[in-house]
Length: 336
Ligand SMILES: [Zn+2]
Image (cartoon, protein in one colour):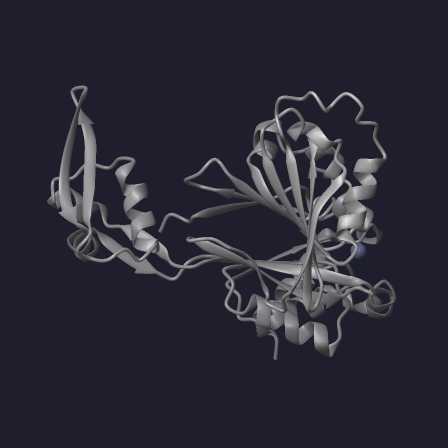
């Protein structure tokens, strides 16, 4: 199965936390956390459409300036999600620069910023042509865990405790449409851009009797056939569960956090989870409102995830990252 999303940690486990999630069939990407973004090429940064920030501690948020600088001068709408006070944090960052020459910009970079509270969502916009003044503030009641809901996927959140509210995120592909290549050949149909349109029609649940246009180029000429969607689905499509990718940083280990993390991460293909400290330093981890590797491994085990990716190692263990990794993995695989 060709995955829809490709995940790339932005740094090694000792670096700033953050995951770049690229769409394999679209010029688009999502970002979970926004620490230092310099390892990403400008081309990759420009693909980002939505950014999800767990909390605004510096190592999770310092990349905002870099993102903004690369996107300035572009026609682009960038959506950013974060915890309570996030609109102020973005507004204050923007207000720290002088924008007297941007009113004549022909492009209109817009930042759409959403703040997640337990029972409300607050949203505000900041446009380059208005000198990034806060505009269009709305406050709507919502205790829904879904932050973004598109035809092919959704992003959920859970508000966790890091001595401050801290968001964890889960990206869920709704269903995955596989194309059976051998069946395709049997029907005498070549691969081409029409397959992407077919997948989209299947995901949109268009009726089986819909006439679907299959087209390709042969010797410079466009050849087309109209085939009922149901016939294509029955012959060349297989629908399987989609990918699920969950991201958890930074949190203390206690009952309420544990329950929420397991609920959010349940059955994930990949769980990126902070493993800041060794269990022998559990007291220090708790004082700093972080997880130990053993606690992270236990949560990954309870959530029955397929792969756990430990990250966000404390600098205390420089050159000893393998200890954190091993402790997390051992508990993940053998947790009681
Ligand atoms: Zn933190």
